[in-house]
Amino acid sequence: MENSTDMAQNLSLVFWGIAFLIVIYKFIRSVRLVPTQKSFIVERLGRYHKTLDAGFHAMIPFFDQVVAEQDLKEYTIDVPPQECFSVDEVNLIVDGVIYLSVIDPAKATYGVTDYVFAAVELAQTTTRSIIGTLVLDRTFEERELISTKVVEELNLAGANWGIRVLRYEIKNITPPSSVQNAMEKQVGAERQRRAILAKSEGDKQAKTTMSEGKKMEMINLSEGEMQRSINEAQGRSEEILMIAKATADSIRKISQTLTMKGGEEAFKLKLTEKYFTKIRHLADAKVDVIMPGKIQNFDDWVKNLGF
Image (cartoon, rainbow, N blue to C red; front, side, top):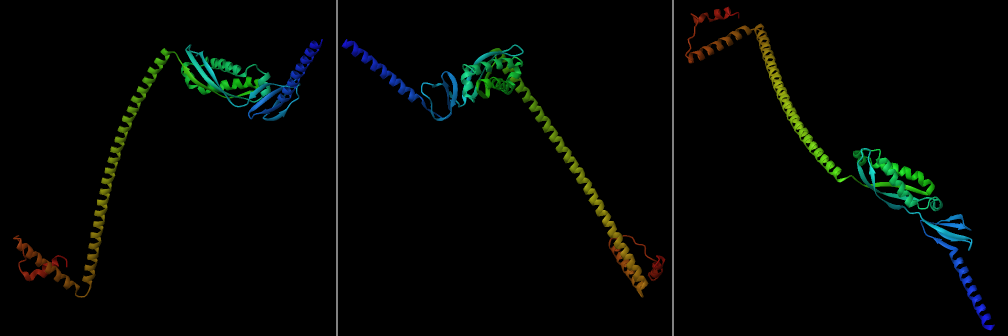
């Protein structure tokens, strides 16, 4: 009997000891320190109660329980390569990467079983459907369009999942090897065409520049010749005007001299002097000269000239 009593007491002590440890553990677990960019989901008696943000929190032991922890930092999720068919029936291998973050921890816990898996699957199906509407050449040009459409679809679904997709980037679009070879040949031909076009444009520009230079040279020469002719004409005109002016001044001075007293005799004397000077020069040059019959008739000869 005593052994049975001792055993019962020992079992009782063990039971109460375990119960005490459980109570202590529950009290310890009821105090939570939530790190920054983390959220804890708390259920009370099996139902959602509240979301614990960063900081110190105390819960009711045995009633409140943390059932999930959500990381609020931005995720980078790889989208595995998948086969996609373009509208012209070309098989493409496409992969990408999703950038998302949790904005509603409660919806991320209860709205979907695994929002990461769901986002990846939706991104793949959306990518396949968009590429199915594009021809091969446009799939390489419309990366931004594909990314925008995938982000729109993910955010529509993400509103119920408590997530927000920040962006989706396509990493690779890989066509079959035969298509790659054809594209490389096409690119090479296009580069050669651009090189030929650039060379022809360069030759055309050079010829145009040379012709423009020759044209400008001819224009400059003609303008220079025209200006020279104008200058010569103006010089001759000014020379004629100056001679005419000087002649007019001389005639005017002569007429003024002739009207003065003794002017006529002085003018005759000047003419006589010039006449004999000219005769002397002609004689020195051995030129036959016709002289008046009588030198004393020189005055009559001068009168006959109109003086």
